[in-house]
Amino acid sequence: MSTPRRQDSTAWGPVFRFAFRLMAAAIALHWAGMTAAAAAGDGADAGVEHLLRKMEDHYRTVSAYTADFSQWTTSVATSGATTEARGVFYFQKPRRMRWEYEQPERQIFVALKDTAWLYVPEDRQISLFEIKELLQSPIMRTFFEGVVPLRESFQASFDAAAATEQTAVLRLTPKQDDPNVRALRVWVDTHDYKITEIEAQDALGNLNRIQFQNQKEMPALPKELFAFDPDDATIVLDPSGRKLTREEIGAIKRRLKD
Image (cartoon, rainbow, N blue to C red; front, side, top):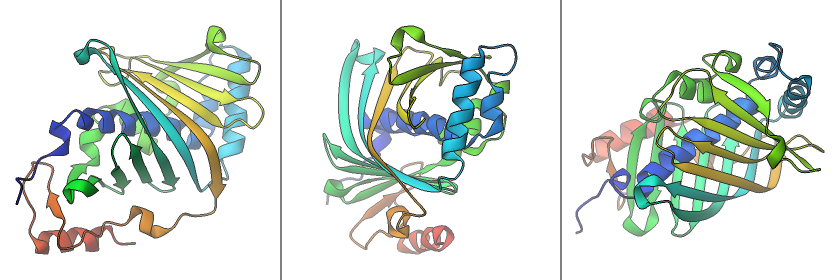
């Protein structure tokens, strides 16, 4: 039997963590309500406030949705080399998220309640994460949980140079230094006010851009998409890399079961 390996020690670990944070930012904009609209209310351009309010109106009644995604990650550590990935994204309130990567290799990242995990079918292995590991700053907690109103964390403005006739681009800049987010840009369709693309840059200059296609909204998604239910042949590692016993795995199953 091959030795279990923690997936976050590979090149993909930071990508998944950054992708999680990036999509959490988009979710914050989706569900933030009036706090998002208020981000532009302190003397900022009225057009920004109008756009945020329209986004709020659109996403207020959305309970779940899915979309195809394309992701480009540019890493300073690899001298600016860019990796590309594609797959399907799922989200449902409250706190259910699934990234199903199809290229360059099949991997599934799920966040549910207070737990997240990465499943690599080829290795028959699941690596567990704690949500608090992924949300390392007040801004990130705001993204996923709405702990702090966005207006307290960001300055919002238009990026006119990146906009087109069909798309407005918002730039969100943290008011305080944060190692995870130096700046965010969000592309919004001005016809239906859906987010079509989001880009984040961290303090090191790493860049992660995700583009969404074929977005579909629905009342709910199948519970199986977010289920933690490894079979007996699947290795499960805790956040420290320790292999869990079947009893420990069963306890997690029961805790995460709806």
